[in-house]
Length: 640
Image 1 (cartoon, rainbow, N blue to C red):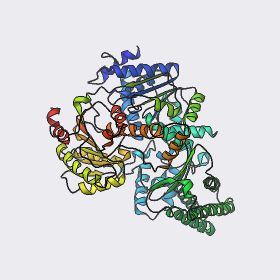
Image 2: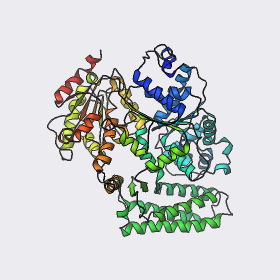
Image 3: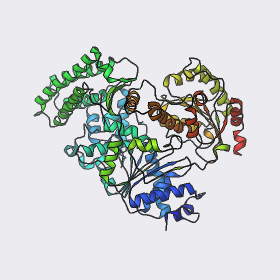
């Protein structure tokens, strides 16, 4: 049976899935991927929302007798593929292929660390102690050890550093629980499977481990298929670079404190040295001020206070190294942390050397931690070399790869030379399903009256849509200002990013049915709300990366040196793809109807506005907010 027949109206998919209808764009995409999986090469496909791209790559992946690794941008999509799409598709195709799910090590329970921390109280924080009890109960029930299945433990739970392992603190074969290790079991299952579902972070973590000559984390494959491929460039930059965080240093201190309390409590000098290091690490974070920020690391090295604080941490790490050497014959657990101390000291020493060309040296602070990054400005050559060495076939797909109907920017960013490339349009009838509104008489985006204007428009929109609205922002500051103006001014519940985890907020929004959700970057993509729960998406402004962003500045400077136009080459493509992601939240199904409102005059006042408009789906357009409100008010009639 040819690949086309599987997708035909009498094929296995039509028999298995009720309401299935053949779609030519999906068939074209599946044929191209099938050819590349069979014969090798590279395939790049932008598949508009509703194309059915998931089945278009899964069917060829399952039908060909090859080892295939599918990599996704988010754990949510990874789990959907493994738990929902693959089992149904295997039934439909009648294939007995072995499939496996493999996540990064931080997602798995480490029973050794859990038991150590249960035995020796790790924290005075009641939240940590309560969560530790929940994980201990989960440990008696789980088969996979996947902490995503532990009810009540969110992705940012405080207990996680105490119950999972990192590459730094994993004891490997020396671990007393090695034979029962969940990560080891997951990797063995992946090695034996025909198709493995991973995520982009794990893919690059594996590549960097292979480059350093260590054992691989995941099996090699004949074919790699990347969904949500628009994220690859940014994630590759992180992994091909280097970073050191005070969070890692704090984890080291916690691990050593556990060894001190359990094995060598009489070694008082070790306890004092750890306290001293912990204070200097906290002081280093404090010299950057209390707010979260990103900036140029080279500039910060001109500040004597920051240099002195960094030298104190290095000096305390050096002293800790000397103390740990004295403890080597007292505990067999000391050797591994001793190596970590040396490694961190080397990284912090390297943070003073900012002379290497082709890299951006930058820092970022969160409320609790500081991270120093050394990031390559161009990953295309590294990625190209990696593909050549692997001798596998590569498929890249996403709903948002093109800029102004061209895939050139995406291909160049990863050094791709595709044998097949295509932009497959969405089958949705955007002209009748959706309205794009750019309201007239808006203040300029930087005007201090803009948040007031957003509140005024949002109130009207929310009332017309009966809740059912996403408000997407490019900055936390504006989001909070609008929340203050909105939260008591509408009868519909308003959920804002930061009030709970992303998953919980989305669940509350969907469960309520007439709610408002406010979010920044992480809500612009990977959020799938179908049906009449969402009728309107309002975007505050075009999502250009802040001109102060150090990584952007370095990339633009690098483009200038190569006689390229920095705005056209760097800023504009990134913003277009980010906007397309935000817009993609609105219409997720052929029955969906809705209004997209973009509150940024630059769409019509600047020449580059045309590039944005051309890159968006072909919705009906209006400058008249009343027309958009009328569409929203009558949306329920449209649907009947």
